[in-house]
Image (cartoon, rainbow, N blue to C red; front, side, top):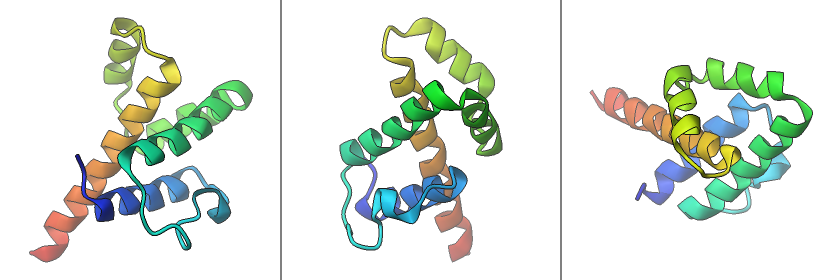
Amino acid sequence: MPEQEDIIRSLKLFEKDFQLDQEYLQLSTQKEYTYDQAFLKIMRVVEDLMEKDFEKLLNVLYRIDVSESKLKEALALSTDNPASIITKMIIERELLKVEFRKKYSQG
C-alpha cells in the first residue's frame, strides 16, 4: 500500500493532469487520503468523462502515459467495471511518477 504522502502527491498530479477544479479533491483542507478514498474520487471523474467526454479521457490517458495495450488487455480480461480498471491504471501511473520524482530528486 502506498504511503500517505505518495497518495497526496499522486492526487496533485491527477488534479493537474485532468485539469480539475481544486475544490474537487480539497487537497488544501483534507490532509489525509486513503488509497480507497483516492480511488473513489478518481473513479467518479473517470465515470463522468466516460459518459460525457470520452475523447478527453483518452487524450489524458495518452498524455499521462497509461499504456494503451495494457489498458486494452486489462479491459478484455477483466469482468470489473471499466471505470474501475481505468482508475486503477491511472493511480498506478501517477504513483509511479511520484516514485520516479522522489528517486531522482534525491540524487
